[in-house]
Length: 388
Ligand SMILES: *Cc1c(COP(=O)(O)O)cnc(C)c1O
Image (cartoon, rainbow, N blue to C red; front, side, top):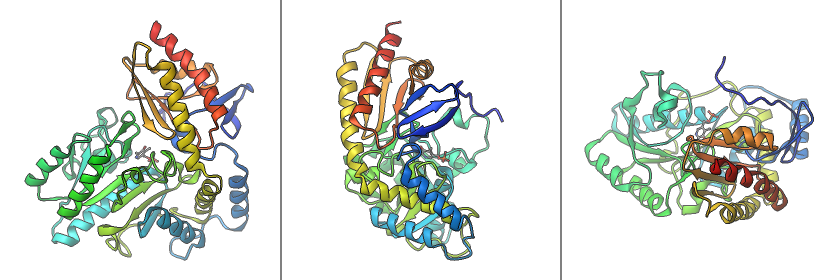
């Protein structure tokens, strides 16, 4: 189906942060398949782990014990402080699981169906019918109505008063779902004060605090999960993109008030958390720890941001450079989609979101030298574009 307007390039292979196309041209990958390939391309440990696992066992079923899945769940539990993990195959499915969990939580608590979830303006939670209702993008939602919108209440981001206002008028609310750093929505950061107050408020009201870490999780911002910068612990988190470093896997984690809500028969998926993908994710986490990639994301991300600020902050048309770790956005004062093609020609893979935000999501193995190449390729393009 014609669901993507694709760029005129096809890659044949990669190594680290570099990709090569069919003509042999080299590219610096500053997008990592949209925050997916954290270990870069063809990472030897990942290749070896997947190959060996494929030779042992690829799939059995969640009807049986799956040792690799259990090890991965234990690891994620240790990293997040949440007790339970459900594995699926994508970010949208992870959020579907979270939304279903919130509904069941409300039902078990009150004996009544109809639990509602507070979601944010500019939120992105996926493209299934359910997660599209939770998503704030009119462009993504358009034409797919009716969406199950009655289960969601949308409020402005970073605005505690808006949440307090709906709390007093809508007794069906049982959860809040948000990204701590909105990705598709334009690299918008929730403030620490807001997140701390929101955590307290959810506890006071008996609501689940559910954080979508599909893009911001797994080291991207310099901590395992973006919420850790605010020192809070949510009840539910969802993961996908970077978790398998390119092998499709999603996860919904539950702790606190969300623990024990789901029981046998409540939810499931055929493929979720099979031996092959679990091994890939486990290896991703192990390599990230061994090679200190969280610290690297923080260090190189800070360096990259400082470099971009230095070169661009006084350029007319640059509104703001924002983000955290290796999740950065450069907001311009005009639509700049054409920069993606210009960067491609210059050997650089980037993305533009919300029409006017250049988005950088490079692999977490990015070095200072790579960051210098990125800056050297990107800055002249932006300057030239804005001077037109
Ligand atoms: C990409 C994304 C999703 C959807 O993930 P898919 O794997 O594409 O279904 C959900 N939430 C956030 C924050 C995302 O960035």
